[in-house]
Length: 236
Image (cartoon, rainbow, N blue to C red; front, side, top):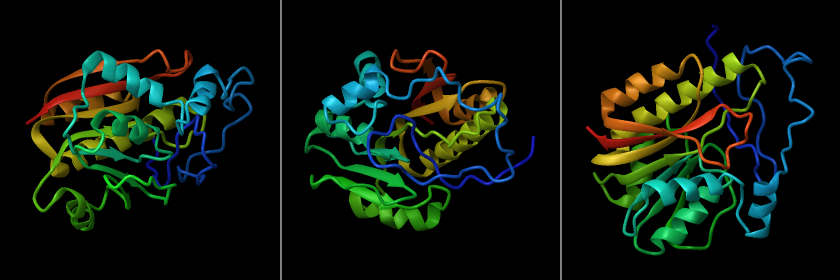
């Protein structure tokens, strides 16, 4: 498969304003057969529920279900959400930790800010660890690290399953590398990935850096989606 450069990402179901487009260079345009199926409903019940409950995206209900089942988020934690826009994960994390810890979100683009003092935005790429470190330490103190890192990253899709899944795996491998720098030993990482033929490439990296992992697909995931969440436990 051809290599490509990953530039900009967004989440489907974003209830805020439309974000930057174009992700995958050198990937062919989708043919008619590869385009989004007519039956695909973007504004489903979870989208409508998110708007009603003032969440920025439907993805929040995936995190809520994961939290109910696995209890990853604790009051007092310092938490980082990677590629956080539009910010629904942050909204829910804030409800759990309130003012007891720091929340840092990292994204390539400026996004609508919150008024709370413990929610902090960094516009930066996670691939540049050296320059990112000083920005992160501004909020969690020098040489400190996060108690939990979450990500609901979604590469802009080409509607070619092989290309989209490969991009998803590569992004998540980068987030695992990010966790080596910024996650405390013994603590956890939450990833979302498109599961298909390259999935084991990610799992091999997870096994290298974490004691164990669990795969989980929340009910809020669309029926036709091949996304799964990977909960990585106990960073080595």
